[in-house]
Amino acid sequence: MSRRYKLVIAYDGTAYSGYQYQENAASVQQTLEEVLAYLDRAPVRAFGSSRTDAGVHARGFVAHVDMAKPIPPENLVRAMNSRLPDDIRVMRASYAAPDFDARKSAKGKEYRYFLYNGPILPPHLAPYWAFQHKPLDVEAMRQAASRFVGSHDFAPFAANPRREIGSTVRNVFSFTVNKAGPRITFAVRGDGFLYKQVRSMVGYLVRVGRGEERPETVTELLDARAPRTARVPTAIPRGLFLWKVFYR
Image (tube, rainbow, N blue to C red; front, side):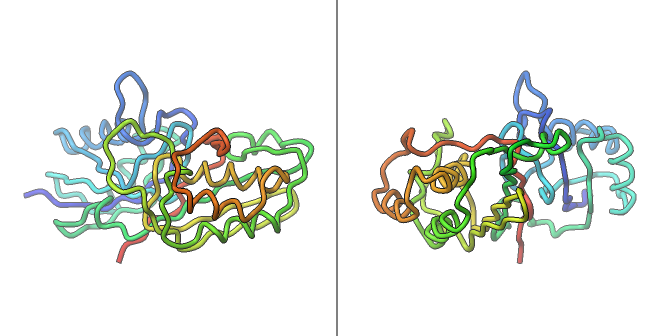
């Protein structure tokens, strides 16, 4: 009889096409499943809490797996990490209820985006921080970010996922913009996010910070519910982290 496990995973997404398996490209899911198959001596699916884009990182990604061999969670963590590449780590493992689903059971997610706003980006930050050398109006970005909070149709801030989706309405619980010296952190929590929604919202906030848009135009775009245009840029992936997934 198999046991279900909940895995909390951190990874550097630089070398991967994203979490989800893709043909002819390295993915985090494929890498995890190869290690799990070795340990279980049979194919194992690692069902993820979300799809992350190529180059996006994770600190608290969640997956569930069903293992035929009974392995205590702490031993599973050690066994997986001893075989995984250095850019993927299982941070925690625990037994899960048979009906636990990493994606369907999630009640919310937090993403954080890191932006270095100074004349020169230190090289050691380059894999994990986006860069903007022009001064940004942080207060204007805060005002704009607050306008994303609530239930809205986020079609103007999402890209075409090239797959069938249902509603484009999502609920954003909070969206903060914090600055410490040249380091700006965007933190957004919601019940779920559309394809490239977080990067699109951050990209637009940077336009507001540069004075190219006013904070109130966020509301105008959301109320219009029009498809996304070139007016909404997509922030580069390397600054984005899936920070945490929330469950009951």
